[in-house]
Image 1 (cartoon, rainbow, N blue to C red):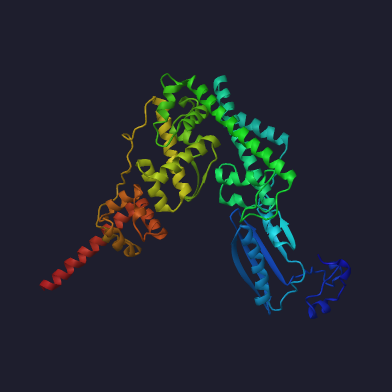
Image 2 (image 1 turned 180 degrees about the horizontal axis):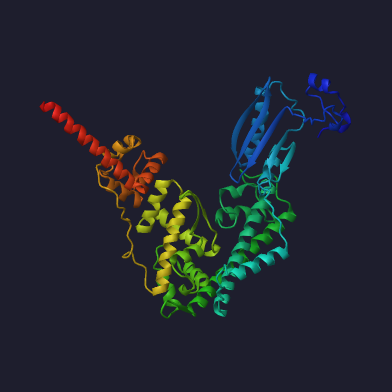
Amino acid sequence: MRDNKQCKQLSLSDLIRNPDSVVEDFNELPDGSDIEYVKEYGIGIDCHSKFIEVCIRYRNGKLIQKSQGQFSTQWKDLAAARDWCIAVLKTKANPVPDLSEPLHYVVESTASYHMPVCMAFGGDPTVINPTIAGATKRKTDVLDSRMLALHDQLNIWREFYLPDEDVKTLRVIIAQRERCLRDATIAGNRINNILTRFGYTIGRNGSVVKDPAIRAVVENQISDSPSQIDGLCPTPIPVEVRIVLREEYEKYDFYTAQAAEYKVKIFEKARSMEWETDTGTLPGDEMIRILTTTPQVGELTAVIWLARVITPRRFHNAKALSAYCGFDPSLKISAGKVTSTTMRNGNKDLHKALNMSAHRLIHRHNEMFGIWGYNLQQQTGKKKKAANAVARKLSVAMFYMMKTGTEFTYDNYHSIRNIDVFDIPIEDLVLINRDFKRYIRILKENGIDTTVDLATAYISCSLGSCQGLGKKFYGLLKDFLDHHVTYKQMYEEIQAKLNQKEDTDNAKGQT
């Protein structure tokens, strides 16, 4: 900390001649400008659970140079990070700062991961809590009620579907299980939070509550007679804190057991109910069995689906249900072209459950939905986009399964959508657009010889296996498919000119 008593007021000319001077009262400057005190060096540390990123800024003559380093969060590596910072300042800084003073640095407040860093570095840390300022708008209860009245008068929104007592009960039980899981997670995170405050970063190697080996080490450290273990912080955990950690472990075990009990109650309630189809009802056992025939959809996902969807009669079509699940993108269109897409939130429970099923399908990619999603991910390089696309297919499939009361089948699915593109050799695309030239060899090596083959491969998302096709190629291909009629006209005109030239050359040759 700088002692304000040592500060003095200087004129602007003095500051120009001696830029390292310190000003106590900025308002005394002749032109009213602000002067900031520049330190000789600066250290910034970004904290994570498994590593820290360290950046040092220091003077080297008239230049400001930077050194970057990454260290794990093991105790010995955190101490090594501090030694590295001092070594860099001693060997690279010019002039060398006074390192007899406490080391100063700025570290972000990320959960409690900054605590071991501060303990290892010592000195005078500055801990920053990053915040994000959101935009505000004028809002009062009166204005809200006026707007809702206007919406009601204009009949903008559909009527609300009121669930019956059984559905509300099922939803409460599901919510209670989620709350128990959330409380168990909070207890587990709090245990790791407390441990890191006292320099124990063992949570970087796995869960301190779910991993039996790691939990055994922690329980040893919070016992009445902890043993010394290599690699852990040498400072023992205070006795009072050990009691708190034991209580948190008890909470975690309690809430985990509660969640398991509520899971049993969820299935009992869902199986005891009757669920509507488009023509009648089905018992809960049968409806759950039907829904679980969907690829990678388990019983819990099926019950969450039933509790939220309730009946397929609520929705006009599958698209409306997909929007309810949060898989219907909102499009921004300008001049007839889609400029951007934004995915709506939809129902969080359904969105999360179907997304998890989609991710499992893509990860395994051993059947049609999974292969299609995996190829889409490879082709676009966007995992989230592929998962949302597969999850949307799952929502559509489950809508019709619930509507008809029938099991899942791929019989009505076509992995390839027909596109009416004109069929020409792939190398002739160069006549229309020379940008295709660099990709012709790659396409032919992968068995794509015609434009129909190319369109088929694109729609089936199998181009991801072709090495060397980048973002530019997919832009060219999409433009070709979207405007294939125009491309066909251009190709016919080029062919007509080539034929005319060939006839002219033949006539000259005969002459």
